[in-house]
Length: 315
Image (cartoon, rainbow, N blue to C red; front, side, top):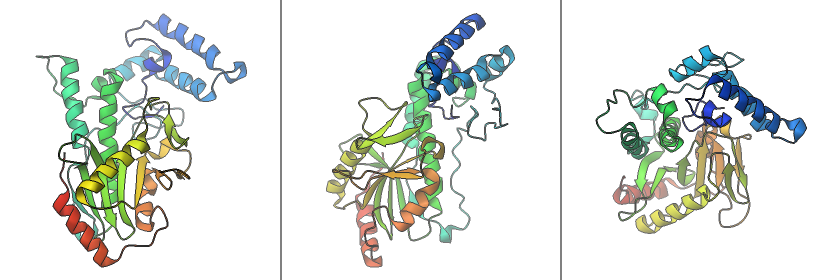
């Protein structure tokens, strides 16, 4: 179980409400252990999730700490800063302004739209007139419906990508939260221009492991009718026609823990060459290129930057 706000809570994993009694929790845990045990035909991944959920809320003291929003170490001692705890920071840390001569040019507000939607839905969920002193209080976030938590996870993912690409260097320009067209509500999370080309980048955190299957991304946190790469391709095409540019490649970036391999590439079809990438690898991919195409000339990059600066609008 990840520390991502989008991850299922222990109660969701066990299939009970957050107000369930200890006996109800224990019965649900024992039933799911039998159903998910690999020796009886269950899923090893699901079996591990059930065990981890019980570790977080099976003991009354641990459950009380979890409900208060406190991070609970895993068996290896990881806390909110590790990969297995249920803590997270909802504060956006902007790239440091120091050393600007060697940093990429960046524009727009990464995660801004997702945070606005999160705050609006959180206030609606809490209720009119109710005090909401800290909309990012981990206790409050954990108790919110998963669709609200997913918006916070989305914002955090976009902000983390913005920090990752900010150090690419002065030869790169990054636009965040870019409108695909003035008459459309869709957006591109990041548009990145550098010597290796022009890339449309989407940042995601579905709160679960993901992989490529049948030409798109699948995972426990992705709806059956959701096609992330096809959606990115559609939005990139709309933007390309509007601004008059052509993308070198499409990239979807996820937390390192969400992908079993450093990166994976779609091999055939209209999306051939599109990459699913761990966030820590993204800067290297953007430096070296995702498709093996020839690098852009300085004049070409300058012309593209001018056209993009003139045509880009932010959401």
